Amino acid sequence: MSLEVSKLSWAALGLGAITEGHEATVLSCFKEVKSSLAGNPENELATQLLISPEAIDEAMERGLLTFLRHRNALCWRFGDARNGCLRRLDGHPFKINGERVKAKAETRGESWHRLIGLDDVVANDRHEILLVVEGSKDGLAALHFAAVEGRLSQIGIVVALGAGVKPLSDDVEKFRGRRVRIFGDADAAGQHAVSRVGKQLLPVVKEIQTFSLAGLHCEEGSLVKDLFDLTRIDYDDLEANRDLWSVTDLDSKGERVTVLTKEHEFLFSPVPLPHVSPESHGFPVYPVSNSQELEKELEELAKRNVCTARDTARKRRFQLLRDLAAVEKRIARKLSPDERIKTFREWYCASLPHLDPKKTRDDYFGSFFAELGKVRVPTGEGEALKIALARVSTSPFPELPGMPDAPESWRRLAALHRELARQSANGIYFLGCRDAAKAHHGLNKDSANNINRALTQLGVISWVRIGDTRPGGKASEFRYLLPL
Image (cartoon, rainbow, N blue to C red; front, top):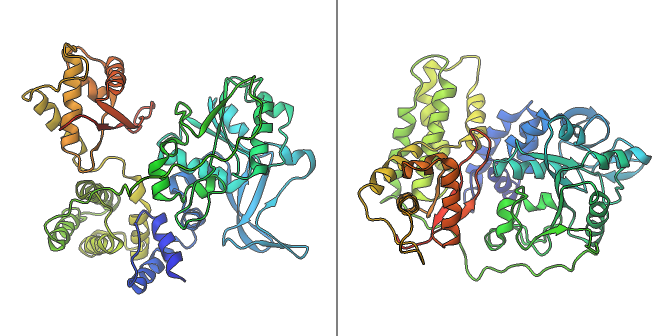
């Protein structure tokens, strides 16, 4: 196994970059993870494709992803009861009639044009749809972005098997009254397909958008060809193209989004020049005084979350992961693979007397890394809000640009944003509408949301990510723009 493969595999688990000179350690640790994934095809697929495990789970929950044997190989199938295609789980092509084929469609003729995922859209009345016109991996990528952006419950995923698709009339009717964002490959054939399908859907949809992938680069420097490639986006391109921060949000309409109208000529547009960032936008690093102090802190966290009774491993392990997420937030960087592995080993060895004897170390090791991406609220997240609210009551309110006589509720909410920003290592912080309403006794979640929008227009704050509307969803992320 090459070092490059190791780098990609660790990235899939959220472990960051692997530096040269640590290949032996990385390969050893990767084998431990791989061993723990044996017999678990969904985790193997997530690791191989670098796709969020949450996206894989959602695809299976919607009935769009299954695993089966075909031509003497374990395969994954993306499809529904009407259409689908197969790919080998090991990533190798099929050998059919002397040809090497990456994906094998299950249907031919008219049935090949059936759109995958529409049954789920109709059954669950999903009003916002991501439509990808060229393949199963792009379908999983769409779910990946929905998972990353916290919008899985709101987004329908519909997939065509290739650029030659011509949606059937009864399929087109199922889009009636819905909002659709179409993704095609970045080549001419992909853009022609987007235009053709968009024109066909326009009479029935509430709104139809296209999203351009042109001019973007993957991490290794190659051009992004499709939505799946976008999951490997180069960091500078990600920073310079804020449309890429809200791929699944149909209310975001930046330069890469085109809203089609009846007057639209449906000619695929020329490739736009990529936005170029003038400098590196890496997050600042706020290290602890030395690596020994961080190592000691991680050791203490492992000991604090040790299992002291049977059947507590899942709860204690997840609390440890929340603690690690809080450390990462404070120091403004991801913990290295070595730091995480040492923490796990400390926790496992101390917890061993109370762990399930039927489970191996590899079982717990795999669970530890599989759950890394499931942490939504780092330890102490609620404390930051309490501290900020307390400081709002004792600190002078900020002056709002152009509004010297702004209402007290506006100024108090602006002060809450300021105090949250002061506690953030990288200047970005969470604030939900219900929590924002706590800034003033006369606010509720709706009025607080309106004031947030007004503060955005005044240049007091900016939205980094709009929060989820569903209960339990992620809060909005903001950046405070005035001097701290």
